[in-house]
Length: 146
Picture 1 (cartoon, helix red, strand yellow):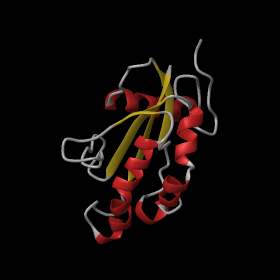
Picture 2 (cartoon, helix red, strand yellow):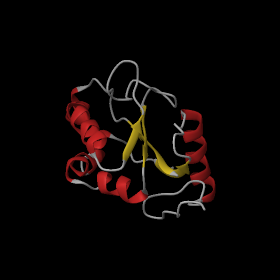
Picture 3 (cartoon, one colour):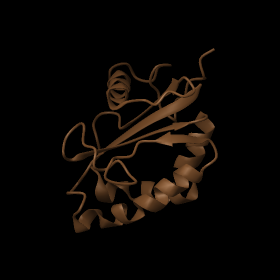
């Protein structure tokens, strides 16, 4: 099994605005760090570039990030690693606090590439039921199914 994750953020301003320039400037670097990280398998990209910010399945002001990893540990190491944590610490400069979960994690069979509908279902499940083996968080992970 591999680990899929979806992370959404509601923008404080349009992606091309000066307010978000610090975030946009770091996208290529952060994405390259993800792809070079041990345990990285796949990440969502759009037809228009190296990142998925052009995809807006849940509104013009919501961006989505999805990826697949070999393990919870691999994803956690990347998320809290040196390059990504610099952006993570500044998230309140660029994104609204959401009243609903913004990150969901779940196990997928090796070779499975999750779609946006699947990701939305996992976020909704996490909001309705809290962490379960079907949708959980990095703070409350569930073991790989047998």
